Image (cartoon, rainbow over all chains, first blue to last red; front, side, top):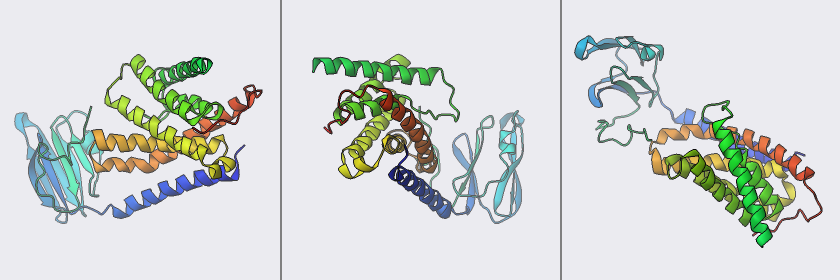
Length: 130
Length: 175
């Protein structure tokens, strides 16, 4: 039933998929700095190479605490009920995000300098569609 | 001609039933991933009738099933329509080129269709709905899932073609 050329077609597509995957792995460099958003507006931007422990306080006693270590960043403590942002653990590659919905908090890593990162005026970030 | 329209509309009905049932009843193994049983009908028409008829059946199937599912003119409808169009065109071109036609079985043509269906959907959602370059990360995964569902559909269609009565000539015209 399966002839040799069928297998060749399958192998060809597998090869394409593998090449794409390797290409994406190779071009995904580790990030240079991270940007913190609250309610869609940039509130902080720092380099990843300095170890640090930062706490952001929001209204009604809500807070998010992040830790920077070894060119990676994670959320260590947060006031949200489910702690999904804490369970996300370390991120370090460009394009990775930690999102905390109850606090309207987004922590994103960028591989190179991007000037304007407000969600209103950037098609890069607002990628949610119905 | 009259007879052919009747038979083709029957195929459209069968394909719509496949698509609606699969969407509503069968739970997906991977979220957002379907085997795509409706493609059996498109392949069958491609082998029994012609490329043009397969294209017509595929597109009409998307229209009718979207009316039943309530997704008519929604993003899901356009993504599905473009996926079906591109997969039909890819399968048709593979089927019509003599070089491939002599060498590929139904499984090979079905794999081409499955992969191009996913590529078409991804390209459509990139250019019209989600203009974010990170959705290309899905491409390797979608190609592999396309191969898997293509093999599945191809094997089923192969069995079907063998069991259907072979009195009439099975060699379909290209256009």
